[in-house]
Length: 373
Ligand SMILES: NC(=O)c1ccc[n+]([C@@H]2O[C@H](COP(=O)([O-])OP(=O)(O)OC[C@H]3O[C@@H](n4cnc5c(N)ncnc54)[C@H](O)[C@@H]3O)[C@@H](O)[C@H]2O)c1
Ligand SMILES: [Zn+2]
Image: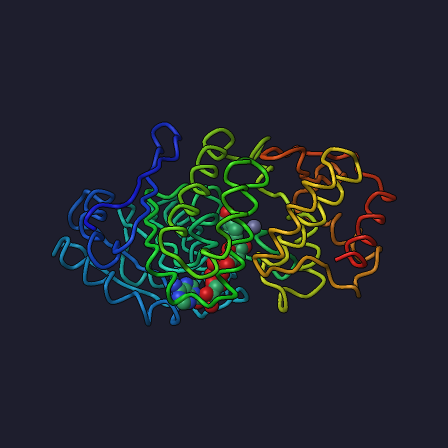
C-alpha cells in the first residue's frame, strides 16, 4: 500500500486542510505527506508526544523528517502521560523549549499522541507567536475520530476541564490505523463510543453498519476500523466546516456529553474514561428522548443495545444523587444563559438541541437509567 486509503478535507476556505487515512502511513508515507503539508525548507519542527506513544512511534517520525529534508531542524519534547498533565505548567515547559531553540513564526508543531497531546500541542501552536502551523498525528481511536479534527485546542485549569483554549485548525491530520494495534482495549472502547455517537446523531446507515460490525471494531479488524474512522471524520469535517466555532449545529457533536461530563466530574475524572461516560450519556439521552416522545422504544433500545454490545457502560454510578447531577450539569461549559442544553436523538441519524428539559424529566431519566440498565 503506497497511497492512503482516503483523503477527506475540512472545507474552511483558505484554511482548508486534509485528513489522510490509511495504514503504513508512519512507516512508508510520512516523508511524502510531510513534504506536501510542509512545503518550505529550513523549518524548525517540534514533535510533541508522551513516553508511552514515543516508545512505539517517535523513531519512525524523526527518521521520516530527516529523510524528507536535511534542512529541517527537528526537536522533540515528551510530556508526561495523563490528562492531569494537560495543564498550564506543561504548556509552559513546552514554551521554554520553543524559546530555547529559537523557534520562529515559520515553525511547525507536530502532535504525536492521543487527545491529551493533541489538545496541548494544538494550544501551543495556537499561541506561540500568535499562531503557527500544527500537524496532528493522532494515535488513539478517540483522537483519530474526534479531537484531532476541528481545531478545538485547550488545557485544563484546576477549576475545570478545557477552560483555557483557542480555536486553531491544524494544517493536516495524518491518521495511521496501524498505530491502533498497540492501543489498550479499554482506550479503543472509549473511541468506539464517539464513533457510535456519529451514527446516532448523523447517519442512520452508519448506525446499521455498526450494529453488524461492532465486534470487528472490538477485534481491531483493520478494514472495519478504517471504514469507521473515515465515516466518522467525514461527519465531523462536514459539521466543523458548517459551524467552526459552535454557534449552532456543531453542538450536536456533544450528544451524550452533558450527562457524560457530569459522570466524569462526579468521579473526579479518574475511574471513567471520557468515552465511557459519553456512552452512558448517550443511553440517558436516548431514554430522555423516548420519554419526550421523539423516538420510540424500539430505536431507544437499539441504541442501548449497540452501546452494550460495544462493552461500554450503560448505567451511571448509582451513588450520584439528583442534586449532584443537577449541580454538575448546570456547571457544564455548554450551559447558555443559565439553561442546560441537551442534545437528543430525534430519529435514526438525526438529533436536535433542546433547552427546555424540566427537572422532573431529568429526575425520571436518571432514576430509570440507574434501575433499568
Ligand atoms: N479537541 C477536541 O475536539 C477534543 C474532543 C474530544 C476529546 N478531547 C480531549 O482528548 C483527551 C482524551 O484523549 P484520548 O482519549 O486520546 O486520551 P489520551 O491522550 O490520554 O490517550 C489515552 C492513553 O493511550 C495512550 N496511547 C495513545 N496512543 C497509543 C497507542 N497508539 N498505543 C498505545 N498507547 C497509546 C496514551 O499514552 C494514554 O495513556 C481529553 O483531554 C479530551 O478533553 C478533545
Ligand atoms: Zn467526546
